[in-house]
Length: 603
Image (cartoon, rainbow, N blue to C red; front, side, top):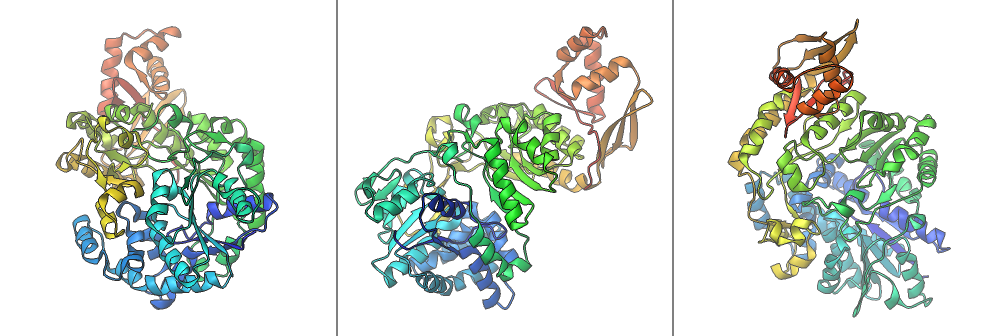
């Protein structure tokens, strides 16, 4: 087998290992091959910055770029001068940053140190005596990887340079192979099976040209999806060894990263219009529950780490009955993060909590019915509010962003919702308000008739790649378009309402209690009178219970009638309107949802 070193360049997160390197290392072991040497460039760059700036640029500065820089290609820009010349993209990015409110001082310091860091990486990688060097590239790892690859080929021309990862999916991988002559091969798609097969082929066992997903010479093969039984459990021994020996370990706590499934079961049939995640790998495949639990068990015991990031794009529904209860039965004090769909019941959210899930990303995106329909989300606004309420009751952290800028959305559709946002201040606010960007692989990208007929590579890429726009069209992930939907002026009230929500959340509660046969809604929300609302009438109490699920007025009246409680729709509607005025209900699209939580989670 060729002596192989796998490299994970910045801007991979400092707190967790590369799942890609861990999976490929494990896949090689499974196939009886020697595991590759691993080089964790993110850790090394954070160490390098700390040392060369005498502690001025810290791992926290690295993390800030890694977590927020992708929409503006900031991480790639830091290394762009190494690939394209020292002055490339400097003036353009300075002007771009000024227009977007981006502070450049620390980024300039990082860029000044990129070239000597690349030299260090090349020296250390060559010291492993490789015949093949593979780079895992996702998000902002393209240019850092290309910078090292270019110098490696200059220093050792006979070396084989391989690129793989999310940035190589579809036409992007073919463009990387076509435009950078120092890249010998690109392996597209999931590589659990194809990477070991490629290593064998390079050693004469099989034909290189027959490896699925490979771009090599005149060969551009289609990628293949990996069935659940062949998804490799990651091996993180290399990363933990590097992390434990690194000064970075003084700044961040390590966490594990695992996957229980690939693809998206919702997107297979109802692709969210703005979402480019999954790329060419949308088909949903979940590992058997027993396999996933065993993987978590093994990693937790081996590395003595309880924080676990599950990188799935969506929770496998069956896991609510299998894997999660089994994790709960183990009695560990796990802290898991999961992406879920915003259609879980309160009982299902409690299953998540009992299993150790402390943070969820439910893809809420908006509380406006018309906009959710334009997203193809498959949920109403009241269901999203119910998810926020039930997660608050269970003590789960909710990560979500409010998205706007959808073709056809109207200012008038937002007004009634914005007027109600003060009633939600006891629930977790969005992390931000963001105009959508056009993403490769999304329906909006694939079908211009959906509302974005004109598109060009996002401006920031001009300051990263010395390539013409027609070439960038195949290479990049984000695209600029003419704005659609709300103007920035029209979005102003939404921004202001959410700023207030964010400030008031920490001191606000609205809790439902059952006391001596009556329902008490204890209101302690900022901006609202401190009051205990008492529901004594049996009809009101039963109606409130129905409203906790989200109902229309007609639906509530029908369910009351089913248990012998008569309430005309008109009279019920007047009561619902009164509760809305008190901020006890949220309404959208003719449906109502009760806002009181069942407990006040610690903040």
